Length: 364
Image 1 (tube, rainbow, N blue to C red):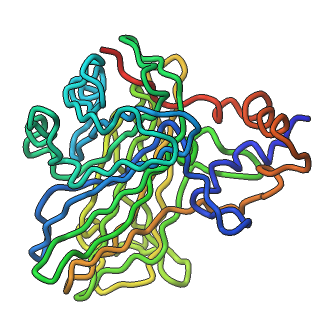
Image 2 (tube, rainbow, N blue to C red):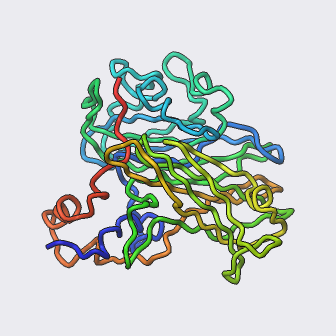
């Protein structure tokens, strides 16, 4: 039986809002985005590094591949057209960087890469050698596929993993940092997911604050296909729900254009971009304005994140985005049971968007 229209976009909600059953979240996928990773020095004598953990939750051995998307560029397509900048597990697959731990990851096993941007491959090379000063901050794309199924043109058999990252600053007292889960491709804000019942083209990030004690960074990742440019709007709201305004009474807003696979991080965004200081309980809204594409089948998507950083300790707190609509448990679990019903619901009768990933594995 075909799901009602209100159910077509429900899968995109569950990562951020959580299912009502034991607060479980849908995080497993063959295509996962880590929205932020760092290897740089920041404000207040902070020294940021990112560790990544990937767990094989599938029933067969998997291979993993990583691509880094540096911040501050209009497009990252040049780093994604082939495997020259990728990190993979097998020498014969054309990777620019090879680490054998990324191959044949057994069911239930976990692979960890400490300080991933500076992680050495089998030849002692790192992404720092590829990107230079651009390697400081960015996002990471993770592919998971059945071991040994990747060929020259791509097309591996997709398999599911769960991804987690930890970004932290080292000090003489230890490390202070934040966990940031990898976001599956199906949990992105989507320009096409708008109807009279849902609008999943924007996300909300509550709890922003900037004063002498804290600073706040906002990151945005264009998770669309590799030919789509997006334009998003960032708005800020007071604790009472009203918009912050300028001297003329116009609502404050910032517009950002992100080229294909682009990543942007606005450090201290409230003060640096909106002129707001000594503010708390700020709600940030990031929404689609427009998108353009040369793709015959565009998939315009993005995700965003906030980071609240303690100015005294450099301890960081992750602020994950939320959709502004409730999760409908009946849309995911349904009234029928059994593997057949689940498989049909997720392949044949769902929205076409839920069956097409925005990017594919690059060829050799």
